[in-house]
Image 1: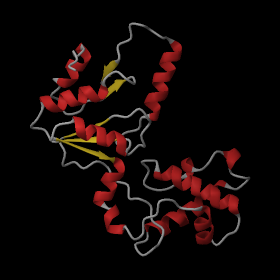
Image 2 (image 1 turned 30 degrees about the vertical axis):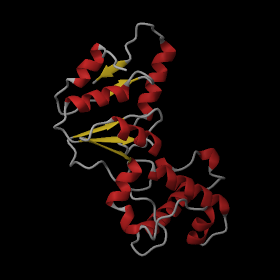
Image 3 (image 1 turned 90 degrees about the horizontal axis):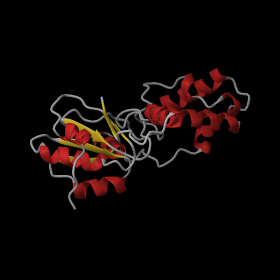
Image 4 (image 1 turned 60 degrees about the vertical axis):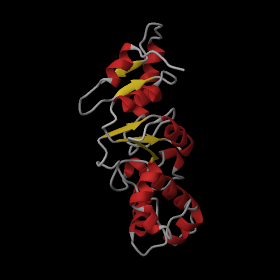
Length: 220
């Protein structure tokens, strides 16, 4: 069934610049607009980043052949993960962290693992105090001690001959002329841009003023 584009969608589909960011509410037709943009620009190679495999599979059925549909994990796997398959693990357990730190103090191992996960979901190049758990969740541990443990763990994971290894983190390849990402859930900062602040800002605006005349699309 065909649909009639809104003026906002027409602006996106006919856009010819270098960088476009579109903010839209859930169910307003983001994916349909991206699909129309891809079909209107068959000469452009595009990368569509999806939150999970189910969304990726649906996108592959909808988008034309000039669009490559991937999840962020697939990007990491194709560039790095397949070369380190023997080292990759689906999850790092608290017991693994405790053994590496040579400590049976489980609160430290737990805080260290939480901090590591926060770091891996960030765009930062190294663990820092910003990745530590909230002060109430540190079991009275000193922040410097937790950060030191995280740094030890990260160095071991980065070592080429270690058995500890996270899934490699990569940014979208620049071989594609366009990159698009759409999801109903927040994405990590590297897939491909932070969305949580934008979501909080949208919620704040909705709480301040709910307008029936608000347009669903916003371009910047």
